[in-house]
Amino acid sequence: MRKIKEVLRLKHQQGLSARQIARVCRMARSTVSEYLSRARGAGISWPLPAEIDEATIEAQLFSTKGSKNREGGANNEARPLPEWAQVHSELQCHKHLTLQLVWEEYKQTHAEGYQYSQFCELYRRWTRKLDLVLRQSHRAGEKLFVDYAGQTVPVVNGLTGEVQQASVFVAEPVATPMPRRR
Image (cartoon, rainbow, N blue to C red; front, top):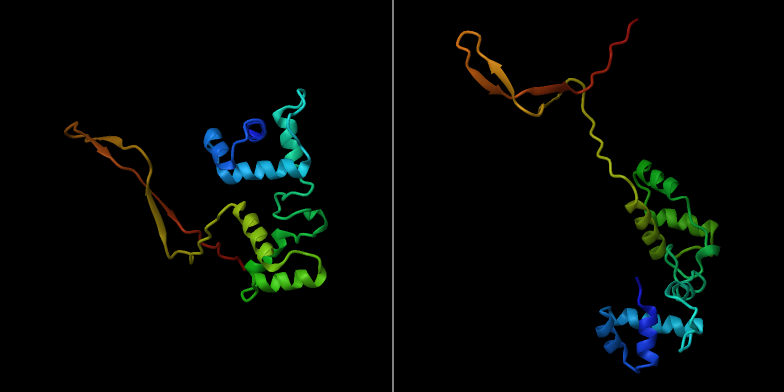
């Protein structure tokens, strides 16, 4: 939970510096400075009304209007974003296509769009949400996968009655294509 009320109280009532407030509240000095500047920008003054709670202050200070939102810039509602899934699939399919070329196409259609560095950052953020898949291609009949099948099993010698533990291996051939009938 944020300590915005406490930061404002220590600044305006106690007159502490941002460094002292950071030490008392156990937070970064930059966070304290950000809270204070956002409070000035939102017009929040001290003393606070009694009915205002921490959530209300937080909503006023961190509303998307005029502040950076999750897409990385101020007031990005007017900036169009490309369809990242389509961009990603094109980059995967076309060997010589680069993110720079995709961005240049994007800027031709959306002149007011993101600049290259922000475009790349937004794409990297989007790719972090993808599930990673390792695709392996094998030629049919070329390999055999072998693995242990878990716990050992007891094997009893029929002549002596001796019990020995045996490991079970499972082997799976790489899928071979079915022959076609003519």
